[in-house]
Length: 295
Image (tube, rainbow, N blue to C red):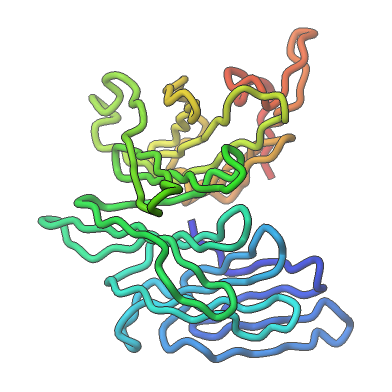
């Protein structure tokens, strides 16, 4: 899921895009703007690093430049930190790592008869534009997300395809990527769900004493899968929307879901009391129990 505006709260401005232009706008009375015309192609997404030190923008395609590209700015100085091109037809998504020192890119260079995706991890620090590791796989990736809660070095992530998902890890000793398929629900893609597709992905922030890390996977039929990522268990699925799920966001307090064609945003509190019992983010069976709120 791509977004085209971020709030650099620490530095007092917002960054957003209009076509191929990046705009840094100060949140002051004058609304001072710095305009960066760095791209030839339209900007597809903007990301803000966890340490608030970097802002990244990327194009989906490279119709004019030849390849889709990524630019990283230092948030304090608004100067370019790194620029690199991804030598594929399309960038599906790009994300900063938990430690804000790597960029994960999912890209596409195939067609329906010959699907071909690339997963790559980049070093962008101090102007570098080097690939730590990459893997080319024979299927289309729809979404990608770091697991920012499992390991200190944040070397794990997950990818979604139409009807399957994979867990990935960067091996320490040779920086190679390895993956395994996630556990699937039995007989899910049959009947009215036969053509359903996975569309969105989010990890639920755990408590310190929690035994696992849970992930939420949205589908275009309005269902959400709840999975245990540490044990590779599929837990259950819940119908939360009447249409496709576009984005899932989570914290210790609540889960927020946006629909693709929905004018409302929906949320479920994680800290709640039901029938005198108290629940929180450590109990995945009650993520979607209780009252739903929409705005």
